[in-house]
Amino acid sequence: MDIRHDASVHEPATAPNRPWPEESLARVPYWVYQDPDNYTREQRRIFEGATWNFVCLETDVPAKGDYRTNQVGGLPVIVVRDADGSINCFENRCAHRGALIAFDDGGNVQNNFKCIYHAWSYDLAGNLRGIAYERGINGAGGMPRDFERGTHSPRKLRTATLCGLVFATLSPDTPPIEDYLGTEILGRLRRVLNRPIRIMGRFTQPLPNNWKLYVENVKDTYHASLLHLFFATFRITRLTQAGGVLVSPDGGHHASYTIGSEDAPGAAAYREKDLRSERDDYKLADPSMLDPVDEFGDRIQLQMLTIFPSVVLQQVHNCLAVRQVVPRGTDGMELRWTYFGFADDTPEMNKRRLKQQNLVGPAGLVSMEDGCVGGFVQRGIAEAGDRISVVEMGGNTAESQATRATETAVRGFWQAYRRHMGY
Amino acid sequence: MDVARLVELNAAYARTIDNEQFEQWPELFTDPCLYKVTTAENVAKGYEAGIIYADSRAMLQDRVSALRKANIYERQRYRHVVGLPVVLGHDGAAATVETPFLIVRIMGDGTMALFATGCYRDRVAADGAGTLKFAERIVVCDGARFDTLVAIPL
Image 1 (tube, each protein chain N blue to C red):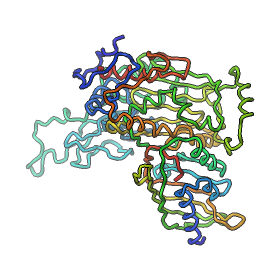
Image 2: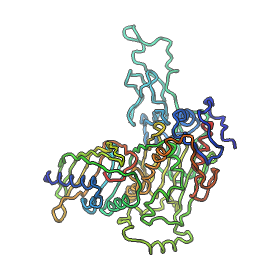
Image 3: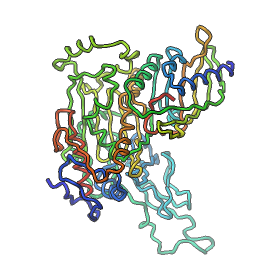
């Protein structure tokens, strides 16, 4: 397959400033995390291109006029529930002087948004409806008679809702979200988001690295037991755990999973050996945060799912979260965490989730290292823009694999990235 | 509740963390207890989650064991500046107390940055020996941003 060819990208295929060094998916140049022109190109070709970008949860905007603000890459957007129940998304930029139309995280506006600067107003679909003093004052001033409001609305994005997640796209060519994800990843998404959710908390984690380093980290199943030592230190890891990585046909989306070990061959022997080697000072004093229940009925204990380009759905036992990756320049990003449970959780399940939320997040006992490791790469490659990294565990292709000792989903990301970017 | 004793308890709390005597940190809590790190926005919206959530002294000990033995992060320490406690009430079992704080993070290379500000929302009770302990310490951060990672308790 020629990964450089993509008829769906509208943007004129201006030549990139720097060449991609090799054809192999297993090599990535470091300038891709540093180059300002590349960063601009990502905004045009990925975030504003034929991709679905997570913009909010359906539960954020339950009633008419409820809105959230967010960013699609760097593009500020408003997501709002319309009178007919549909969800609209449009650029959060007044058609007049470019000020933010809405500056809060969210709220309710009833029937229209009004820019605070000069009170231009917009309906819930983002159409410019009102201009203050449009006919002037006492016959003087005002807008020219031939000014057409209709041609001056902010850019509108198409929206799609899936399992309570709301996505938006600027491109007319983005396929329906179900086709975009493919059946396997769709199944993994529906597995977790199978009924109404309730938000449990929100946190923002600024990270000192390019956004792609974080997305790669989530897709990288190879590092988990090597960088994150919590489970190993406290003798919680079971080597016999089965798992694997699913990669969507276009490479961009993935779901990795770990299956509980009760019935795995050799598990009992491992446990016995483990018990003999256990030392009291390396045991958890209160193991109550590791009292998971198999709430999805399939013994999958961990599932990490990414939707290209920038959203993660996490199931770590009973700790569930959506993580949005927001680029902030070539060497910075924000990770926006939304922890959630289900509307029908019992008090016991709620408590279980609260305790398991210790495992993941900015202070996550299992994975806090993910917060700093991207910055270590960003600093490490400071003067290595013309060098390349090696992403070759499990080969140099990007198909689904029944092992976690692989970087197949990382290569899948680069397959999709290069296609969108024209590299 | 004697404010001078609350000031002393808060000073001991700050000193324990800032001097990296983490093993003594759980001793400042009753058992069971509640220690949670969250944000003003989550509290306002009634969202219960914390980035750290512990309801026993043993869970606090586990957090310390993890940061000593398991977690990997760049060398850093905190400097707490803790304001004056305000006693909001007393229900016989414990006093409800609020205390503002400011935490500077000092990285291994000497970089100092304002890491968190907020308010401790506490329930403080005397143990059998009359020593004041935190039955609850909800760390309500003013902002929702936690830079890079939070290894050391706030």
